[in-house]
Amino acid sequence: MNVLVKPTGMQADGETAPGEVLLRIDSVSLSFGGVRAITNISFDIIKGEVRAIIGPNGAGKTSMLNVINGFYHPQEGTITWRGKVRRKMKPYEAASHGIARTFQNVALFKGMTTLDNIMTGRGLKMHSGFLWQCLRVGPALREEIEHRRKVEEIIDFLEIQAIRKTPVGRLPYGLQKRVELARALAMEPELLLLDEPMAGMNLEEKEDMSRFILDVNQQFGTTIALIEHDMGVVMDLSDRVVVLDYGRKIADGPPEEVQANQDVIDAYLGVSH
Amino acid sequence: MFYREAGQYKTTYAADQQIFPIRQDRIGIGVILVLALLLPLVASEFMLSAIAIPFLILALATIGLNILTGYAGQLSLGTGAFMGVGAYSCYKLVTIFPEVNVIVHILLSGVFAAAAGVVFGLPSLRIKGLYLAVTTLAAQFFLEWCFIRISWLYNYNASGAIEVPGREFFGTLITGPAAGGTTRYYVVLAIVVVMTLLIKNLIRGRIGRQWMMIRDMDIAAELMGVRPLVAKLSAFAVSSYVCGVAGAMFVFFYLGASEPAVFSITLSFQVLFMAIIGGLGSLVGSFFGAAFIWILPILLRVGLPALGVDIAAETVFQVAQMVIGALIIFFLIVEPHGLARLWAIGKEKLRVWPFPYA
Image (cartoon, rainbow over all chains, first blue to last red; front, side, top):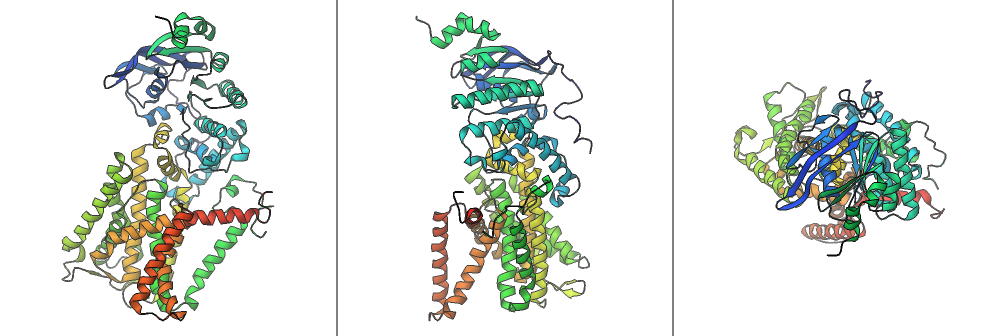
């Protein structure tokens, strides 16, 4: 029973202190048939930071997230998670290790309400058995209420109380993105991957989302890796930036440094031949 | 005006999460249950045996299919066969262990159907949609073949049919030809109500959410920690269990005797239509769908002559079929999400009536 009250999302072994490397990518290469999506990329993500992954379209950013997620398996290279080299794993295993993510195209569960969508994020932390759930008494009911409380905290945090019981299909795009963030937060992840969290948003929505991302980072201490095309957002939010182009890493460092890098400028603006 | 939740404050999450959070709905379901209990007082033997009992059983089968197709998003055409597995295993259990209570057998027979469902659900791990429907179709034909060819299943009976022996429940005969309609009705009603409640609980809990996650966005579900193997096969197991119990009841409480043809593809389609017309992913829709497909034709057949429309018996049957067909098309055009959606829209409108813009 005390499973419920323990601060979740962490496993006893391999706790990572702030400032230590949470995830390290070592010379990872990924190809689909003859197409090389990622070539020999290495970088790391430090616990507690906001790490941006940028690059022109088709640079391999989303493929990189899919590798971290366990959705793609790189042909070469290693991934070290909390100091341990990670074996080839399935996405649901990565999820249980504390990696959550949002998607470039909203991937909410369309047939469910906002509340249920966020509740799905608590799934890994619920353990009551089949029969208890059929009867919905004892541990099943306790668990459901316990996690509802947690979900309500997230709803308050992201200011989406009014749409709690609305089917997500009916929500405007900006709110859907926010519900998706809420769903990922409900997993209390150690590493949160955001794939273009601000795509298609207007200025006001972008500002809201940026604030939420910073709040998540500071209030919960969640490590965040985000892909974003809006350079203003990237420069303001991130602690460190890694730049990809054609599946290769061309720069890595603090925003100001990356901004001044000639290779990065060339990749974005193009060079005359 | 009368259907409004104003003033019904929820102060606990438990109260907010109950099945019927609106008081009017609770009263409504209470009234329906009381009416269902009182039905045998006014209904004739024909109404109970030919309408009410099969309606309830088919509604349960539709719920079973709905778990798989409506909630977990896995299309299945094998419902009839899974019901058959339930029926035949119940028959075998009753004849092998005659001293055990028949209700226990009926509930156990679902376990065999669940096992069959899991086996034929294995392809769902690789394929989806219409392709999966084709593999469940294979289940339908294979299992039907078993019911015909494996004579052990019907105890080497020369007719190839199974006949339900009379069995008692606390001294009252509940199965077999001699059992009264009222008794059978109450047994069926009890099983259907209890199972519906249990499934409702399952669906609004963690397991049900996992099914819907797989249905709505399987990649996101997997990235959030759902194991597709567990979620899909559990949906197949629970769905087939419910279908199996419904199949056993279909033979034991409704037909009294059965041959393999009962569990043919026609039954699968009939249950699938009930699920689609009622509304995929809705329990109340399962009841609507079963009522639409099962009760309406009977009402038309009985009702048309009673209204004074003077037509021959076969013509009545044809007319009823045509009317049903036309209504199916009409309802699907008006609301592709089935009667349950119409019901939900009606309730939403009623809640804001008479000031819809307020």
